[in-house]
Length: 229
Image (cartoon, rainbow, N blue to C red; front, side, top):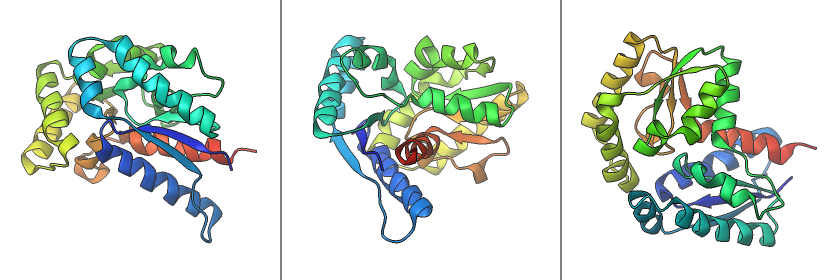
């Protein structure tokens, strides 16, 4: 079994889900008392979020790069960044690593293609929804992306002011469901929960469209990679 290096803390609420699901999935595969070999580096999200607000992406990349190098030196065979937004700095981090980073968008695209999705709604932080580092990867794969332009700030506020603090509010769930209804009206065939916290609020049972929870998809990909011979 390969050792998985997790860069978490962005937020720690969703990092808990990563740790739990990876261990559960390993045990489902191997049985007995088996669990995953994991090294976890958990950053102070306040530092990262301030970099995001100030558009200092290179500085935030340097913070994650240091953690990535520590994980490699500690024996990680590959890395996972436990957040969608900070995949913006993956090219910067990769330059000084000799182990791979499993990209969350690549894993999600593979899942979308497996389900034959041609148009998908992307919900996430305002950075993930509006910038090209994530969205363009999906478009380049031949899948149309619908963005809820009128609701970007509302979604971002729910993520940072509620979900990152572990607050799960019925009013926010209703708001997300209304936004997804708009996506359906615009022809979306599926919805990407493109922030690792959104899965804390929205599950498949809440909506009629196929839901692609990036935390779950990323975790499944990690387990497959860890068990590859």
